[in-house]
Length: 571
Picture 1 (cartoon, rainbow, N blue to C red):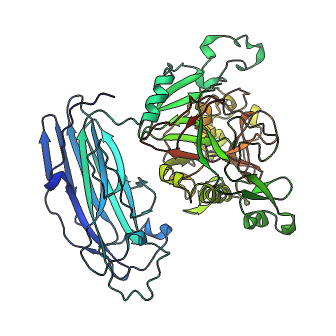
Picture 2 (picture 1 turned 180 degrees about the vertical axis):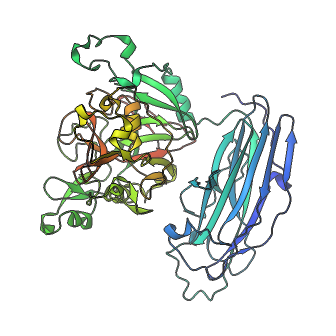
């Protein structure tokens, strides 16, 4: 892609915008300097500024801590806030990056592998949006030519802006829980300098996304596309007479906004979104009770209390087996969102080893409270299915070089809008007595309009609605599950059979969980799942786990054309 002449727009020595220097050890956190002025640079139609806040990281007795504790600290001296603003006129884009650099000068230094950094964006209502997973300090071996960040620093967050805006950020830093301070003599130090780099120029688009756009014409959205199946063959009822009407045929690549910009998503019966990424490093086994498959003996026994002896080891994959995925979409941040498709680009789903899944299990073992619809609940407790997905990722990809390309991507378990079905205008003729039926906005408002007294268009979104509940919400994860909104965008619909690339038919091995709560029906927490059509079921049911990851690479695809016979390769 031809680039505009780049102009570095960040003020400071050696073109570094210095935000702060923050010191950390297990004994004490100390902020070594406090900025008091606004620094800015103006170049033509661009102005970018940063402002430091008065609060500093200055904590006494900071012992090793867990991520759950370290990422929510809000007492004085436990976090550092700063602001980046832009004033842009005209057609200008800034690619910018926030990074951390080790500037420790003490001879008694704690190793960076024992330090975790966590960056969030602070919204206008005071809520925080995670911009990265908690990560140990690790320096990049290559520079980012799009932002100007050099080698030897840790990248925390990369984005772009093309309009005037102000963003508030919050940094937390803490000692990992694995660190054992006994015997280190005390007084160890670790200091980082937080830098911001930026350049104007075309927005960075990875080669992988460029390839998808080159190979797929972006289709125009059709007004009624969310109401019908991907090939139009099952519009409303077969008697509709619309089975061949091109107004309802929506196969190909489309676009929609997500939190990071424009996302390009595949819809319908497409066949060129196959990817090979990852490889099993050893034989991989799960534990079965005869009809379900769990990632560990412990989880199998937990789900089979009183029948623990039923849990037997079963092979999922062999050493050297390649992992295959379907591309759901190219995210607004340039990463690819992939859903697991097994050890074959075209699994037959006749057995566990010849399937698209990594296991079959309940979503949650408990079901008598709406909180059990959440991918997490009680402000961070992982659901049963989350623990299964996390275990698979840690064992299959987390300990490999492929892990470096899997980013902490956005995931959404939408628990917003919880209220009685009658308030959503649900039809009693369809749903029966509504007294004990409560729905979330996903099922009550966006994705199941056929159950309304006055049916309307489905309205899926790639932006996670804000929730006030202590369960569900927006996450940054290495691995998760697909959302019901993504399934609808791909051509699936509640109560309507389709032939989209995400529909695997009626085989008993072909139904899988989403991470989208649907409601609390007659005392049972329900989540949406895919089974020929999108449907809701109790969380204590058992369906497949089909992991979703987000992969970002600067190297593009290293082979293939996306077809089943010749999948794209990311290596």
